[in-house]
Image 1 (spheres, rainbow, N blue to C red):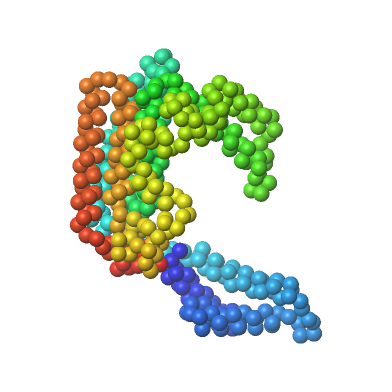
Image 2: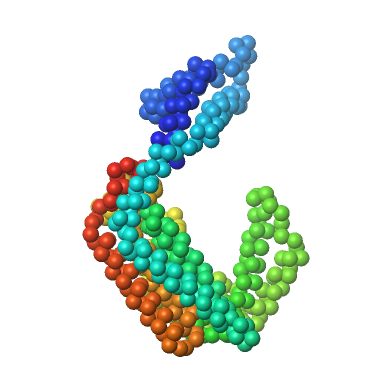
Length: 391
């Protein structure tokens, strides 16, 4: 929530008829300066002292309780105003954001519209392929078809999430979501290449993951205020998991154990899967995207939404920016194209070849348009005019 909203709330609270000590505290909270904060501390202390009967002595525990009560009183008033008047409090911020999004679309509209077109084409291709081929695939128990259609649907959904984030100026969040679709493209390629044998192992691996989730829940259910998993369910999952490990080997119990035999690696990692799929050249981008998932220092200093001259400096990006959309946009277009081609490619024919060719040409066009806008200007467009997204 922007400080302007808190200020507006505090200003309104300052007009509320209340004890003078409370009123003066609110006035100084509005100022938000060291001197005002010091006066607030003094007035809060005076208010606390006024609650103590002069004939009684109090210990530190009682003083702490009174202080908490005083703070809670202020918090209740502030929260009540924010809830009651949230529309007026948010009006200015929403106006600023609306203007920012219009300027972002003026700059990035062409590549974003083409990216949206790719998502629509890929979704339609997947839906039609599923509708036309599923009856025959079901009769033949085609596990590869089932797995790839599920992965493709998920990829389309993630790509749509990336589009929403990009249209709203969240390049770093979009890059984090691209990481997911990149992993989907890796898995799709492996399933497409190795067929039903690997597809079956992939599907059955759900039991391994559910057992890990159940065990993690069992370790922490009391602290999260939930019920434990019934002991018989834990025992059943463990038995099913052990049976699969006995069938496929010890490494099947790992996170990517379903791919161990296919790629010839015990306890494989996502890096091993990328290398086997032939798209390990994307590792640098994957690592940058991972910075937007984890709380490492590089992710805090390097933000796609900041210009190169702002990285690691005093500008802190706390919201949207119109910088940095090219990498997540183009990367997602590439990965979605890979997943789509893995799906339609299991059915050889002229129509599949045509779809693949159109997608390849479109994703190249998308990359060219994103790069064109990226190179036009190095500074954000309009974001600093209102302060939206900055802190």
